[in-house]
Length: 520
Image 1 (cartoon, rainbow, N blue to C red):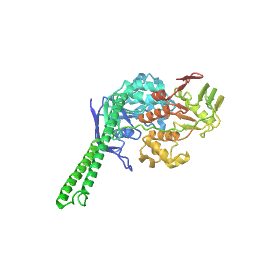
Image 2 (cartoon, rainbow, N blue to C red):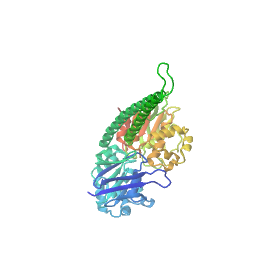
Image 3 (tube, rainbow, N blue to C red):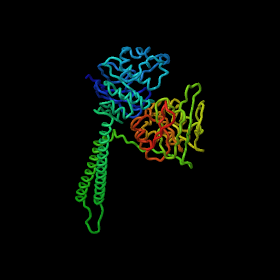
Image 4 (cartoon, one colour):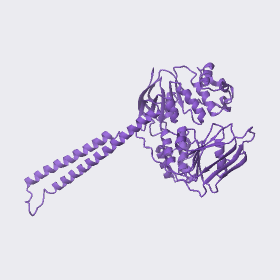
């Protein structure tokens, strides 16, 4: 297979003080199924834009064929039309029969291609755009940027099965199950370096874990050696100073120091001082030799949460509850019965469109949380404990704007502590002076999560909190939620996160009345 060679790549955005890439060189094979990993803000999407020629850069990128990138940017006019009518506009070399073939491989109804695009669900849109992406020439190297965001578990499973049968692509994703199933190599943006490694996410993570353990052990050994050298240097300096002090003076027992004796003592002192300097040079040399050991170590810092205790055990009670939107032919959900008690971490699970976000918003509305009031028809019971304080993270980040200071003032947060939590979530300090609207999608989600973590509450409601969030931050949140006794009601389609965090699950099914509640 041919190779894509990146040589001495350097790039920074205009007005930025730091380079996103600086003198980077590596090569990848066009036949690989390549996973692309890295913290939010490290430059994954930027690198895709560089491959697509959307930004000017220093250095060179040599590729044997063309690149094409998912997701496609659609116009408002295209959103109103069926995909079959505009497919050749977003991918000129695609052919209708190839798109139909790819839809069948995803086991998806080909009639979706002839429905107005805006009427389709997020999962249906994703699968159509992936079918168009893979309908071009075989020599194209395809760039796929987070295809499973906002998709339910069933849609994710179909995308996972489909991509596992393909090759010649670079996949940006934070879904660990997707990466394990679909890739055979990984390209990783570490803290200071870039590495290419054979294997999937789990094999890379195990190798990294062992490497980090070795680096920590070596660093501890190195630290002890440095401390020993410091003590030896200090002792030698003390000896030299003490010896130097004996050159001149009178001792009642010993004789006076004559000039010949002084010269001998001075030479001896000089040797001691020289020895101290040699030890110091050796110490600095060892520091320089070892300083690169921890350059790529990912320390997953412990986060803190401040939940409140409520006098009532049951915080949310829903009984035979139904919600219907105006002019809707059927309810968003009907006959729902469930409850959320203190200390439970409940995952609200189900397909797109089954009413998960609607239920969360109605709970917020009944608890008196400030948000846009929903105009719906209700029946049954949806009640919350009196005086209930809720910390809410929405899946929508479009409302974020303004500086961090204004954001903290609006939410009554201590700015210094808020910035410290953002740093723990690996948001660079350079971001703190920017408008929140200029953050990447992952950084915006971290801004909302940091605010929620610092808000004392009885109940935490998180609606798809992990969209765009990097793997390391997901692990931080998993560790936090397992270690703190809090009450959490959340929607998240990342199966690995849900399994690690949830103490129980409430499954909503679009075509069935009622809830299936499972505790473990």
